[in-house]
Length: 358
Ligand code: TXA
Ligand code: MG
Image (cartoon, rainbow, N blue to C red; front, top):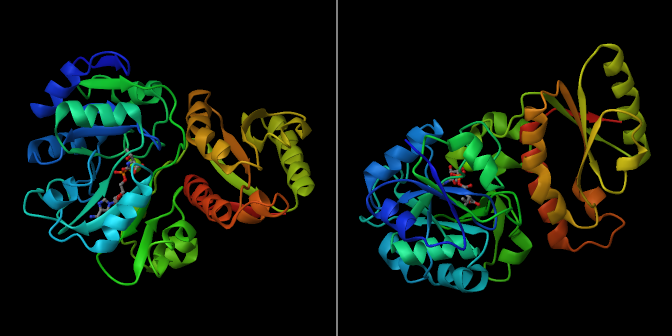
């Protein structure tokens, strides 16, 4: 199959046609690129799983451009779901609700619930409007790779496997949307993201984190409520370790490990904050962003992991970007602090839970 690339400011006529006839089009959103197909066409959903090499029990998110779509896709839409939609859509919030008969089980991975979100991105919204279809889309990476944050990442993974890619440049947030399950009490965050519990509590009385995603030890016994959270995602080829502790101790520890690696002939990568990057003496240092602005870090994280793969790095050390560090002395908001938790959730998974305390 030949994969065509369409720029976001070009005509979407062809892309819309591809979707309507059951084909696949990758597109940008404000979080990560999605791999879209017609959510109401079971054949399209099957193609999505095949293109990604993804297990078909892992449900897809249905993207919409109009709140009224909730009535078509969901069996019941409680008042608070509309309130959340009005407040946070378009935006990086996915709601889980009971599905209607219109949504095929191929799209929901066999579940009676459906995940819905309205993305806050011109390219995504234009594609939704022009095609007139509800677009089922997981992240547009091959299963096991970090979610794509540029059209080039998508091309790398999906060239020859899908019909088209819409190139909208780099995405903004860089990590996947927050997922909130509204189908049973207490309402729970199944995947942390840019929209934090503190923000949701402006509409919902109580929101908890799914206990299975809070810490690594708990998750060994508990089954995450979002099927996708049980897979080991985002793992780079190199062995990745997060180094946590006082800033200068972390830098010193990494410097000494890099020195040893050089003697052993290991190619070492370092993921550092803008504030500390120039304190490293050797190794391939990549700047994630500023600890004063967590979204600069989420924005570049997956791209950095991919580039270490391309450069055939053997070992990667990452500074920790935990809540204390990102918000401790910087006067960050409670929401910034929760968002730091979302970033660490992705980084910790990529590291296979390897954390070294110094
Ligand atoms: O930011 C995002 O959400 C991106 C962009 C493209 O919108 N999409 C994305 O999709 O991250 P994906 O497929 O990579 O992740 C979807 C997650 C998976 O963990 C899946 O298990 C969960 O959502 N999910 C989907 N439907 C669900 C449902 N009905 N119940 C529980 N979890 C669900
Ligand atoms: Mg994904």
